Length: 241
Image 1: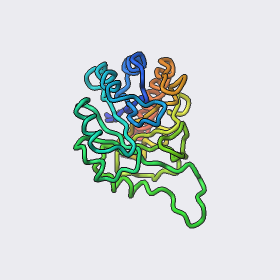
Image 2 (image 1 turned 180 degrees about the horizontal axis):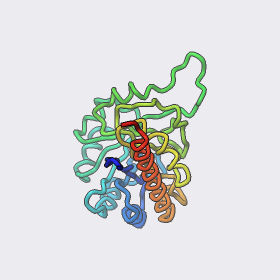
Image 3 (image 1 turned 120 degrees about the horizontal axis):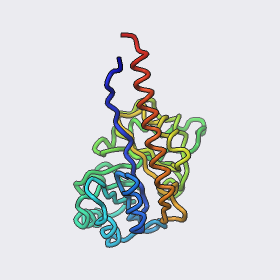
C-alpha cells in the first residue's frame, strides 16, 4: 500500500526579459515568475517604463520580479509604485536593512564562489550565516560569484552547499535545459523548497530569449520533479514500518 506524498514542485523564474514575445513564451511554457533587470550596466537592462509595459502582459499568479544592484531606495520605491505586484531581487551589496526599506517582499542573491579549493586559511562562503542574516528575505538566490554583478552564465559546485539550509532557495547561475535536472536533484534535498532562475541558458543573444529553449528548460524542471517524487515514494515503500 502506497502512502500519500505531499511534494512541492519546483518554481521557475525566467530572468532578463526585454521583449513582448519572450514574456508571452515564458508564460505559455508555465513560468511562475518573470524577471526584469533594472541595473543599467547590464546588457539585459530595461527602463522602468519598459518593465511596466512588459509586466502588464502577465496573467494572474505570474509574478514580475525587479532586479536591483545597489540602487537608491527612492528609485526602488518608485518602481514598486509603478509595478505594485512586483517582487524585489537584490544582487549587490545591500544590507538586510537596505533590503527592507521599500517595505516589499524580496529575494536576496548570495554570490557563491566558483573556486572549489580556496586558499589555505580562507573561509568558504557561509551560506547558513548569510541565510540567517537575511532571514527577512522570501528566499536566498544562489548565484555564482564572478567579477561585477550577476553569474555571467557560470555554475558553482552544487555539491559544496551545506546539507541542510533553513531557508527557501532559488538555484541560479549557468542553468540550462541540459543541467537543471541535475541541479535540482542535488539542491532540492538541502532546503524546504526550491525554485530555479534562468537567463542566459535560454537565450540566443543577450536579452533575446528562445521559446524552444524556454520550453526545454521547463520540461527538464518537470522531469526533475517527477524523479524526486518517485524517489520519495520508493523511499517510503522501502522504509520499515
